[in-house]
Length: 93
Image 1 (cartoon, one colour):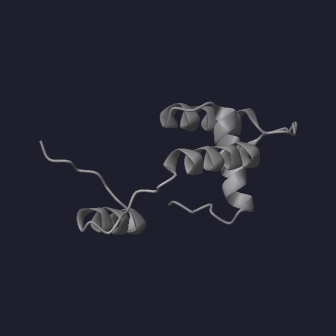
Image 2: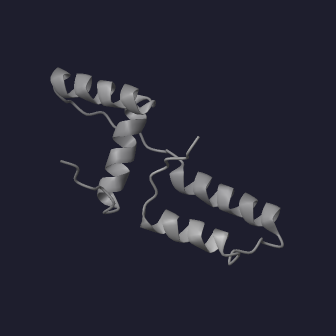
């Protein structure tokens, strides 16, 4: 069975580097992983609560999209807002 993964440009570069043996293992992988996990946890810690009013139509649409993505709708909203404020929100038409 053929693998039909769709890789973006960065992922293709990583795959090519791996296939050419250009990637090396970290000597202190477990320590590095723990530090990165802690940094991610600290950065993504949700410590503020907000209340917003939106139309029931928009909320239903958000809930449907979240279900399709396999995540809670509040996570979808939070993720979308994060992408917007960091300039990583991409317009898909």
